[in-house]
Amino acid sequence: MTRFVLATANPDKAAEISEILRNAGVPVDLEPRPDDVPDVDETGATLEANARLKAVSLAEATGLPAIADDTGLEVDALGGAPGVYSARFAGPDATYADNCTLLLRRLEGVAPERRTARFATVALAHWPDGREAAALGTVEGTIAHAARGEGGFGYDPVFVPGEGDGRTFSEMTSAEKHAISHRGRAFRTLAQGLQVMIEVPDTNGPDTNGPDTNGPDTKGPDTKGKD
Image (cartoon, rainbow, N blue to C red; front, side, top):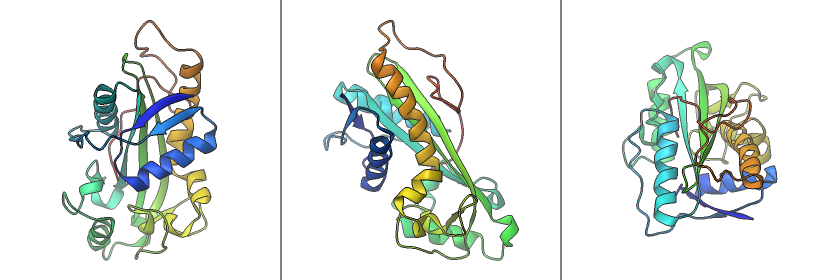
């Protein structure tokens, strides 16, 4: 079983990633980010750039291959905001509730048909030798008029996926959410790439070719947003 270190220090996200990969059956042993490794400044302009910054930093710090992701919520009525600033939409120390409250306030008076939005996640694995695998997962939906539900985290209480039955992500079980969520899709696709790269390791250096978002991509998608 191949050891990977998770780049995220967010316990909610770490638990979700671990559950998705475990259910995907990929033979990896996920280790938490060491306490002595500092936060990575997410200075990238895209999800892919930020995911790579985090994965490369952890691989360099630990000598282990690292798995990272970056996730964003894009709201059409806000011109795609909060985008890459989703996690700090209400400020650098914002809580989940702070971000949701600000989002709902910005959308006050916006008609239901104009509250369209999407989540996007880039999941990325980086090896110390430079190899990478990356995948993109998205889900379309709308922003509710009020927070609903007790589960999930981030913007889950206000996001209603279009493929669901009218419930927010927070009102779903984790299995229901993962089946259609951006992160579930991204990490299930990444799992396919990890399986291939674990079984047939590349000893000749990084491989920059690969399929698009319908399968694992060793270059990675390029999109904007985050949670």
